[in-house]
Length: 216
Length: 366
Image (cartoon, rainbow over all chains, first blue to last red; front, side, top):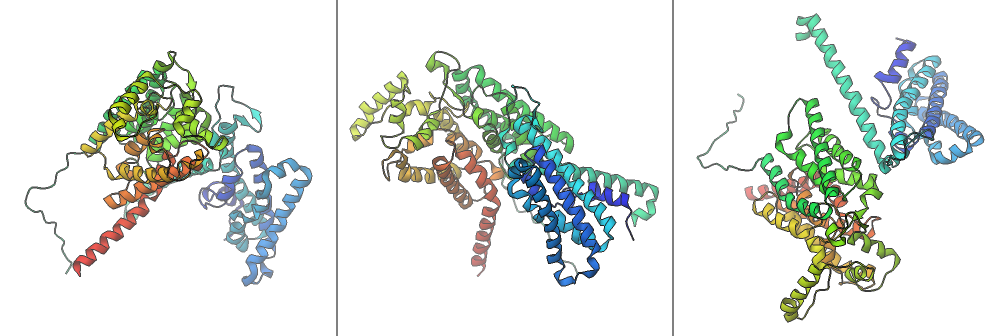
């Protein structure tokens, strides 16, 4: 059955969120979330590469021999990642320098391969494109939330604008990668307990509506 | 037929432990009071505020977590003890967000998030202290001199350990820790001079050795340092009670001391250009938070091994790591990090202990 576009978007953003549920792309969550500007560039790069990669791979999926499909997936995905890298180097050399190897490392972001294997390999190109966008944004929302906290507490700024007054003492730990571990874990904690509670409520509602069926 | 397992109850007397979690926690807290009072005498208000802030934050955190888990757990005293330990590890006059956030981090994230008392795999108080050390290195490294030494409240200065450590890199060669301190204007108190003179004339003189000035000040707590770690003397006295009352096990502090002292003795003199086997054990052990951490924090029953052999292994490793981190780390202090690292290895040590037990049972059965 072909999933509706609304469901694909909802899956990517929440029900099957790459960070909360699939727990993919954690490496870059740790590495590039110490300031919001770099994070936004990273989100754009990942979303672009996932969407176009999934689109292309879905389009050529009939032509791929099964045994070498992963090699071809990597080839196609790295093509888009290199595009991102070249564009950044040409138009935003400062940011490109700050992100360093992390732009090239988008290829190792598990979300790209994950979506290519889990979705694009079984769905038409247009749906795969939407799925790529939705997953990129689902990843982005979490990353952005973490980056906002880290940049504010670590530097007292947001997007480079100073928000906190002189009284504020920056949290050195927020600039270091370990803080992202704490923050990702706390975000996961929150989303998991929210989902568990929603699930319990749903089950209780089902049990109430049809007591004998739920008892079986 | 299913096999029925019976629980057999033998004849009395049964082993009965008088100790409860609450009595352990409140007992340890009570024994920390003298060290706190000394901090209060030295730093006045600057000692009270961080401790009160840390305890209040710890209690608030415990209440919040208790609210989420629908359980009231303040009575067991562990939150109070965690707050007290975090507060005592703070430098006097530290900005209050440091103890507050560290205590909240300790209680909510290290203890609460993993399931509350008994489920944490790292000592909450130490994790809070390490959080503060990494997060606010400048604030956590700003020390004050005791007011009764300078006559004025709030004169800032380097702690002896921090000062000596900062000299490692710049000027090697030349005596030892104490003469370095003396040469750069650390004035030792009259009390120190008279006790040292007495010891040298009446006791040590007969043995043909003499004690340089300064050790007494460092032992009593006439120095710059964190609120509760100043007086090694009061902490050691409290530790004797801890061990005698079996609140803590002696193996852990003893083995931490053993491996740390041996390493300091062998390698500790090298940064001063003195060669091997010339380290200053007394100075290293009495400085910084070594005594407070190894007696009150490394011995936490939740995060330390449960057999004597395991505890000795754990302690030896902590002593070794402490030496390495103090010697080569960027900061002067190392014992807190060493204990937190070894906390993570306690489950692994537990597996070794278990394997040892199974082997022994097997040999018994053969």
